[in-house]
Amino acid sequence: MLHLITGGSRSGKSRYAEQLAARHDGPVCYVATAEVRDEEFAERVREHRRHRPAHWRWVEAERALAAELLRHDQEDGLLLVDCLGMWLIRFFDDKDELDAAGFAEERALLLEAVASLQGQLLIVTNEIGWGAMPVSAMARRYGDLLGKLNQDLAAQCDHVTLMACGLPLALKQTAHS
Image 1 (tube, rainbow, N blue to C red):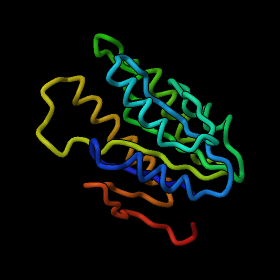
Image 2: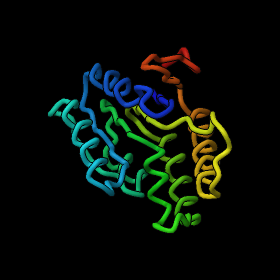
Image 3: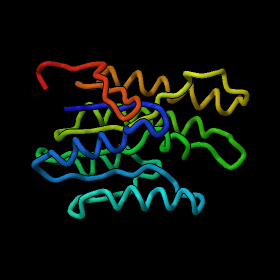
């Protein structure tokens, strides 16, 4: 089963994904994608970790998300990726310049890996762009890239859930999964 969970900031995406993962009978591997750049964010990461069961494996994907998924995939396992928005930020440098070639390559590898996984996959992502058009070119580019990636993954997934106010709204549910 492939399940994409999307929503806005603080919508309950991660908590919902963790609740689904906690119901899984087999091994769970939490695949973290964020790069910690300041103390406030480090505390958020520590808080997330405190809520997870101690027996879950934890790996940090950095840019090589597809490679980590393939490395930790198990037929009876579940991979929880949190989150694609933070993963995309890793391809922007301190001057808000995008490593377009690096992202294009890793994006293609990710879509290929997702299609080949044997175990279950929960992917947390951000649904952005519901407000005014961003002022900066970097923010517009980020929104375009993440929006297209979300669409491509949603097409591959058996389930797609939109989180709003802590409540899940099923956007896609394939009967066979």
